[in-house]
Length: 442
Ligand SMILES: Cc1cc2nc3c(=O)[nH]c(=O)nc-3n(C[C@H](O)[C@H](O)[C@H](O)COP(=O)(O)OP(=O)(O)OC[C@H]3O[C@@H](n4cnc5c(N)ncnc54)[C@H](O)[C@@H]3O)c2cc1C
Image 1 (cartoon, rainbow, N blue to C red):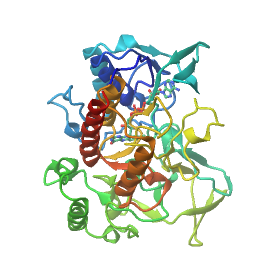
Image 2: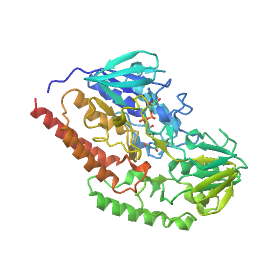
Image 3: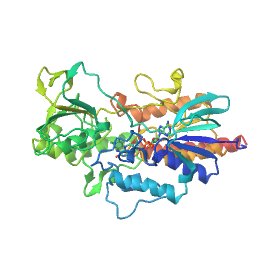
Image 4: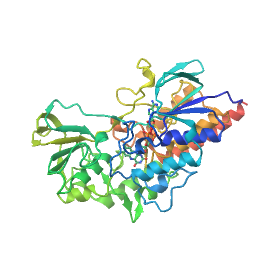
């Protein structure tokens, strides 16, 4: 196949954007990269002036260092197993310096509009300029648009999303307050554990619609994600073994005073915490059912009871959003159930020259996902990989979704789940198949 002329636009310089840029640079593909902030790092840039980072002061990544590292840029040996957001940001800054990527990023420049035209995209920037590209790479992240519950009634205290939580003292002083953390995902685990010390919140409640399995960060002295089942074991066998192991490791959630989950271990995106179970077992975390309505400082719950609260922190997740696509282009936005199916979680079948990077809830890591995806992208753009037909992409996409999602209960938070290791194995098979197709049609 003769490579077609390309000029690529990359939206975003978080870890997904910078590893994509590195790959395109390696393959000699021309690109422009736009970043609305003043630095790389995206979510891992604490107090990012773009207002989109959800990093709180005490955050350490839940993925261990060897699982998150980029394959051509190992993390420093002296790093702890679970680095802080500061180390993560330093790492991404060092990456762009090492590979000479910084000069290719136009900082302080947002992509405000991306419009399809024959053979490419017209991209309008916050500078007012419009530039034309053959291909558009979307790496704008999917943890920046808070999903807030819409409770009936009014609340006279402070209600915020975990996205805006910085520390026990910012944006609201927590000491001595009655606090409800809503949700039992990873941010809820961290924030509830941080605020549950007796000298911190007066009372710390966690409100949840259902119980979850809380998994430890370590197993036998090793980061738990280092000892996951290898991806070449059949999934049902690996899943059954992992579920049994988790049950044996943590026991019953009710033993800690927590609600029993109504699902199997690993039927939800893992909630990982070293501290939460101990705090719950020590009586510092009080569980509540879901919130039904608000009235002054009274919070009414679905079981008919109520509590008084001063602060509600909703750790209730994020919506995928692509504000640079026109609202009328409904096929470019997630549906009402927050579904956004993609071929190999990168490509909308039938929408030419558009690629999404890092757009998956990948367990145990998103950090190096785009690094793997960019292998397919770079080959496609330089002609050594050819996509299957649109019909075949659709068929594979449906089968892949079924394979990746069937273990999870249906919920908005589980529409883009993948198992990183299995995904990568499958992606390399797809790259090999596409290389054969490209050779055959040469
Ligand atoms: C609290 C929290 C904890 C997390 N913990 C983990 C974890 O343990 N392990 C893990 O793997 N992941 C974790 N994540 C997920 C996290 O999103 C990823 O690790 C990673 O940040 C994804 O990188 P990204 O480049 O895709 O997106 P981001 O980091 O969000 O970067 C996107 C970049 O695009 C830029 N941008 C957006 N729109 C535009 C535009 N229109 N024009 C120009 N630039 C734009 C933004 O400014 C930003 O710099 C966590 C997320 C949160 C919120």
